[in-house]
Image 1 (spheres, protein in one colour):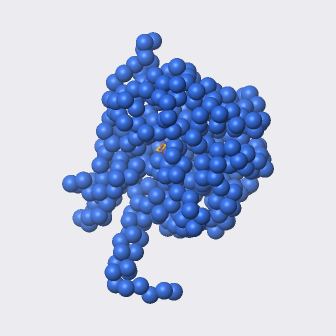
Image 2 (cartoon, helix red, strand yellow):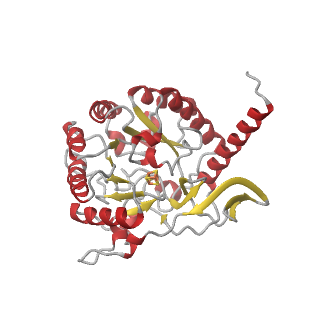
Image 3 (cartoon, protein in one colour):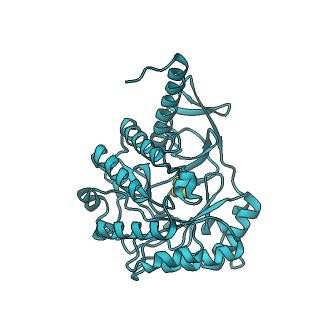
Length: 366
Ligand code: SF4
């Protein structure tokens, strides 16, 4: 164990408190009225969008949270946590609609302060109750009318152009529900990336999909102009995969590995990422080892806490979020390995790791 000076000890204690507080905020949320929200949708993240110490943060808005906002700071009861917080303002482009009357907000949404995110196809072949990922609500936002089932390339281009011009959006994330064809959704992403880049040349775009059955789609996504790619496995333990993702786990891990390797070959090291969820029951040390192996492959493991979002099967079954201790333990260990490998989320240029809002990795130095 090394012994630091009083100053270094004070600094590292302050950092520790920040990471702990950020982990607790990610899990318990905050009592705040966020203007920009994403209450449901594809994948495991929801929440109100704010800036914490200037960085994007997606936090559950929770009237029962012990954390509150006063004078631009996060408070725990009467204690000032030292974290600055400001809500993300409702963007201008939300006021616009396409000629045929679809509101831009139904086509793409602002995440954090500067990320435009869309789910190109809002349905998923795996959404039947016996197949569905237990943390996902991709079709709930469709049912609630918050979005439309399929976004055309032209619609995405129109909204992206407005979001960049009116609201200073700096990157875009395109995800998709899994489609029935062998490309598993990649074909629509290729068309969408091309159309957006014609309207907004140079906009960094991350695409997210399952490993396409034919790996040539990865090259096509890159050649269309995507900057980075997310191929999201969520868990590496086979039992956990089967329990939480009955449909998606029928794609063997070997297919993920082949897709990650091809994506690193095509997009480059640290332009490929995957979600790893903390709180699905995976052994934390095995999760950290799995993340380390991904880092070695050149893949950024975006560590995110599982949160029982409204409308998920997990919430229906009363499964709770992980403890902040476990979240912090895994996050710090993975952040340390990312630093050692010289991989930072910001270097992905586009996508969830570059945004960072749904994870605590950024606060931990990843
Ligand atoms: S990390 Fe990804 S899902 Fe979360 S707010 Fe950022 S872009 Fe959206």
